[in-house]
Length: 246
Image (cartoon, rainbow, N blue to C red; front, side, top):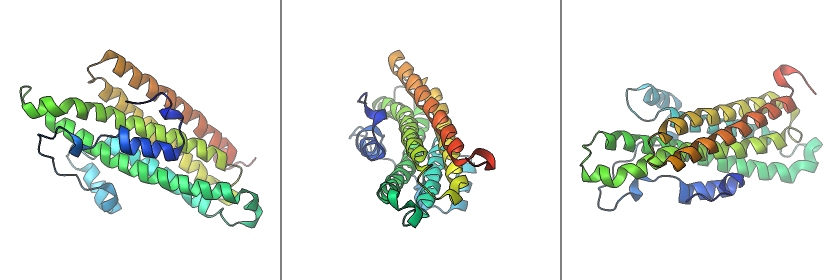
């Protein structure tokens, strides 16, 4: 069960909560059902192979996995900005904050990559189970869990993006100004990941059996995406939007 404070936690707690309690694991379904093979992790594919697998006529990886992967790219790019800032004499007063940010960005990157894999698994499960007859025992046992995961995973991605953008906003004044365009691009990518994930929440929430659950998912995603949009704009402004400087 999601706690009301979940979306207000920092990246580390978000990672722990999402990894341990919130994200669907296809191997943790009804124990009487044989586990399905795990799809190849995005992290195990070269970029070219990943693009081919996305473009293929297969249900997964799809938009949800791509959205999470884009968020991971945003985190990685922000990590590069921090790497060029750590140890810089002019930023010595911010050294501790920069090192902490580097750790948080690494955690966020790993979390978002896992969420990309989880999304592919969840959607693949929904697609597979939905093709079974309605009287099939496996469909009855597993479909509701898979459908809930197809909503929870993109919600977790949006939550991670909120935390990422909060962190990026704090970095605008303490990182190397020569890389301000990279930090701005990282924010744009992270906002895009959140907005993209909201589409999956909106579509998949429609299949939840509870009106209250559907409404909560839509409201949660809308509130978080609105914050993402605002914070991404603040990062761009702090970086000197479109080439202008402060």
